[in-house]
Image 1 (cartoon, rainbow, N blue to C red):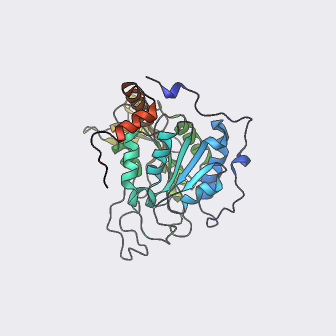
Image 2: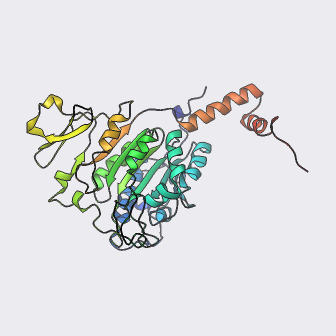
Image 3: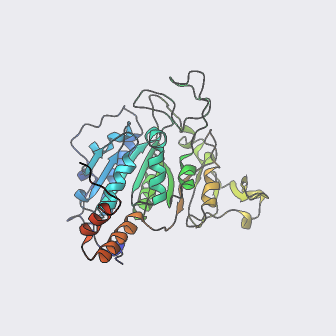
Length: 351
């Protein structure tokens, strides 16, 4: 059985590259002040670290403000169909192991019409890197509430307040058995780059939720996580192997309560041995899931960083191994084996 992960299938860049080489000649057309600009700059600056030829990197997007992303990356790309970017990217990643495939989507695109495509890509563990821009609003269609808008949110489509409980994208991904789940913030370039680096190194599907400000229709949605006056008390920075402590002076901590749920306490009030140590590599996703539930609508106690990073069989590799076995059984090449499977005894010719 061939282990495709051990093969050097992806051509390396011929010479060291810079962020400038990943910028296109297209005018970047987002609203001035949009958080997408910061994410684009971070991704363009990070791409050279992959060390890959640009023609072996692909960005696939759906529909929405974030989905203009492929126009601005000097790689191959596709501005695809509303909610269907994970499905299209799955086909590409499964059939082209020489490509590094990235998906760019938004909270409306990914979690509403694209919800099923997202969760099945995650459970299959296709070799994709998914960047989910979450601004808690529909931006492109001018300010309707989205699947992540908070309860009671007043928008053009909910003038009396939203009655829908919002999705927590990290919780959703963990519930779908995602092998890599992380969260970052558009304006925290250093942190976002570190998360991109971890995602790129992961074998399988990696989902990064990125809190992204829509300054036109939902301005300052994440301001408490950015304002120097509040961010230290509101933001929990997760680091694998480190106790979960935060605050300007490390005054807050997380412990397990008597019912095994996570509980926020003052660090000085507990024994250091009782403080929960973050384990991003735990096989059981319950630790990561519990952390994802700490965040509140106000963003108090919001964890950022890598929640989960575990090894699971990768769909693309399993598929190619299956085709190899079929070819051996059929006595022919991959194409002959696939043709035999598609035109076997359960097919009919009409007409």
